[in-house]
Length: 230
Image (cartoon, rainbow, N blue to C red; front, side, top):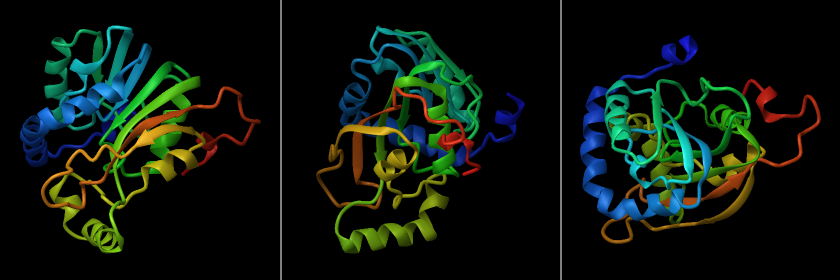
């Protein structure tokens, strides 16, 4: 737990902005949260829980949610949201690259608009794979590269300049599907939900929602992605 605390982040201005923005767009995003979490059961780890807007959407078949959030103000808001949830939610500090939980301890993992902000995508997804039991499921709702050539150039330029500074470390030009596949997780069904299908397209407007799974069979010793320093 000490390692997770040292890796914690504090972006108070962004946290306040994010809480206001997420509340404003929740009528649009809420149905995607329902789809993201539908059918989950057992123990779930949510990585980068933000202000806890997912908590109200977990089905009662979930026995426990361990919600990891490194940012202090967002973690406080998530803890308040956990009190109103229909399922048990434990909100704890921690970084995606070093999850403060045991290996193979969860039936499912959830990442929701998180992979864009982590410092090390490869290590974060290796941690997801580590904490999932064999056959465990990853649910993801992320944004990344999208649109035509001009938009992709714009996304990469935004990532190199002001976008991460303005949006709490967010990067719009990452490839979540490719990264999840490279982590040794089997991609299931996914779709582009077009959450912001009206109005101007921004670098962060291109979203994907889907599932992946940790393979049932254990890999040969020394071949697991978690053995890499990433």
